[in-house]
Length: 88
Image (cartoon, rainbow, N blue to C red):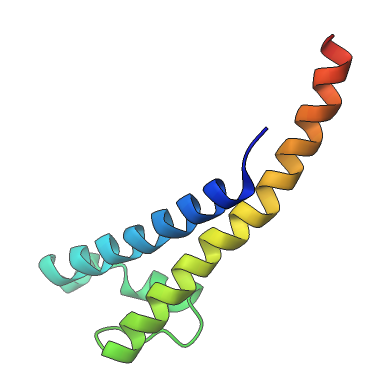
């Protein structure tokens, strides 16, 4: 069984760190291969290279990871319980 707090926080931090890596990547590579267009599409109200946009993107990325954990863990635990009984 998965612990919802551990998985949710782990996924939230993973997506927040991934967002930071994407921004750093965008800062050190030529504009033609940036990910800012993708980030602006998937993160509502995100604007490239503004402090407000960075903070909002970081929060939204974290919340996407939290959402994934909150949805995934109960589904996983449901099937884990169901199939554990059948396997015995």
